[in-house]
Image 1 (tube, protein in one colour):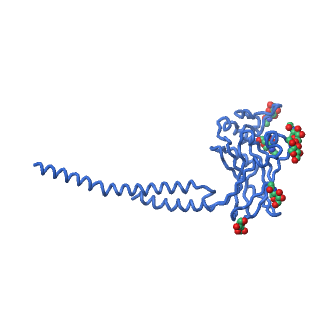
Image 2 (image 1 turned 45 degrees about the horizontal axis):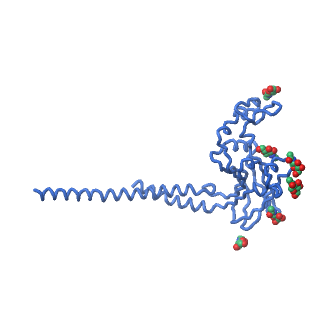
Image 3 (image 1 turned 30 degrees about the vertical axis):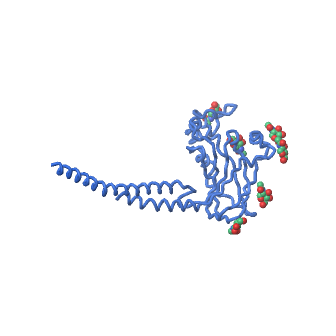
Length: 263
Ligand SMILES: *[C@@H]1O[C@H](CO)[C@@H](O)[C@H](O)[C@H]1NC(C)=O
Ligand SMILES: *[C@@H]1O[C@H](CO)[C@@H](O)[C@H](O)[C@H]1NC(C)=O
Ligand SMILES: *[C@@H]1O[C@H](CO)[C@@H](O)[C@H](O)[C@H]1NC(C)=O
Ligand SMILES: *[C@@H]1O[C@H](CO)[C@@H](O)[C@H](O)[C@H]1NC(C)=O
Ligand SMILES: *[C@@H]1O[C@H](CO)[C@@H](O)[C@H](O)[C@H]1NC(C)=O
Ligand SMILES: *[C@@H]1O[C@H](CO)[C@@H](O)[C@H](O)[C@H]1NC(C)=O
């Protein structure tokens, strides 16, 4: 009975979650390859490391479906192992917390001090590798710059909350305009961040939100599977409850019959 109730509650929740996730509109633009000038595609490292080459890059995105505000702007990194042990440990929380402890750079190897022995603030691999691409958006002459909810300090905090998976999204900003279907938005971006050295991908993601958050089918499927399983168990138990006793009864009846026949 309990299983049946749980099942009856979970299955509709699952269906509603899946429908909500389907309503989320996402625009995903991978730009790390496209932003390399055509005469440098064979030498991406030389491009990203050469400070005299402009890293400005223009991308046109077409809105596939009407997008209601607020629209979340994320950057997505792929093949980026923020969970590597050596990487995760390369930080000094005391230095981060307190300006006067700038000299505390223990555990920050290999990004501890500059060539002339001055401490690096903030020190450590995580802080050193802070994502620094920037985006600005225009639409038919009007700017729709994202409201950037995070200060530089908070950006670092988000970044230092290291991701557990090699593909992850982090929030860049929010756009408080609706985007209409078939509209083209122009993104002017600064392609500063070097993912070429490890073959990582960079993507810009614009996504609407639902009451569930972003586009995520997992929750819906989880509810459906658990709910379905509960209903299955409820039926199985019901069958066992009603059928098995009768079978046992039959069996007893037969053996009793055989005994009496033998007598
Ligand atoms: C690539 O082309 C640009 C102009 O389009 C030029 O300024 C630059 O020097 C070229 N780079 C190489 C490596 O040829
Ligand atoms: C950087 O690029 C410029 C122009 O494309 C080129 O003249 C220069 O040699 C490059 N520098 C390095 C270190 O490759
Ligand atoms: C983007 O659109 C603008 C104007 O519509 C156009 O001038 C520009 O060439 C386009 N850029 C790309 C990379 O397609
Ligand atoms: C850090 O150490 C250097 C010398 O090692 C010293 O000159 C500097 O004052 C120290 N800074 C702080 C904030 O303690
Ligand atoms: C972005 O960060 C990289 C290191 O990850 C650095 O080499 C580059 O100079 C930075 N660019 C800007 C514009 O801050
Ligand atoms: C968007 O473009 C498609 C194909 O070009 C067209 O079928 C559709 O009606 C357009 N939608 C709007 C709202 O203009």
